[in-house]
Image (cartoon, rainbow, N blue to C red; front, side, top):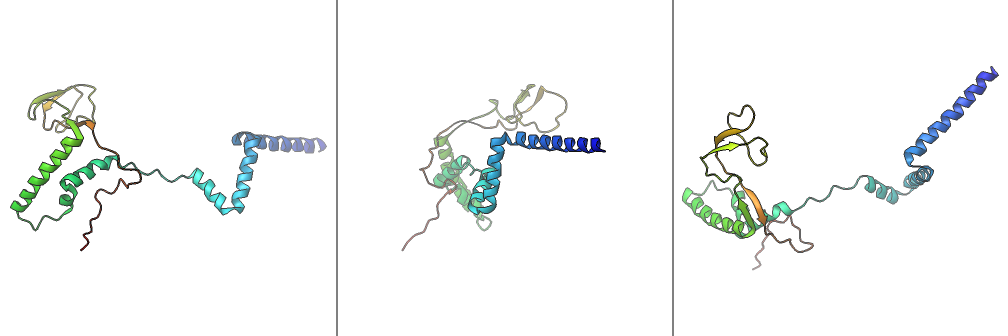
Length: 189
């Protein structure tokens, strides 16, 4: 019985040492384990500290970039495109809508030409027969219709696509909210 109790005690000591070694190794060593225990102890008694620790482990999501909306802001500023798109045009006659569209089209086209250099993805005219080779970029060429088998595919070009070759859009001044596409306007009388 003494031998059994001695073996049991030795097994418990070795098991405790192995468990402690496992947790120390997981913590990155005794120094890191001690630091972790100090952080846990302080977090339990200091709410401001606990909040800062929580922010380190759960940072807020990054603010999205406003670069994609800059062009929309330009089209609003120079052609009032958003105003047109967000307005209910149902009460207006086709002649009234057509006159508005003509003006918006001219201004939007000028704004695009000023700030963006566009080029077609495929150089052929719409309606031309084209061959899409194996290894084509599906982000650049979308196959529609009866698509079966493996490339190369031959079909009729229904849209040449657009690619931005270059952009010329200045970054707004520091501190300006880039998500404001058009500020509210208030006329003071």
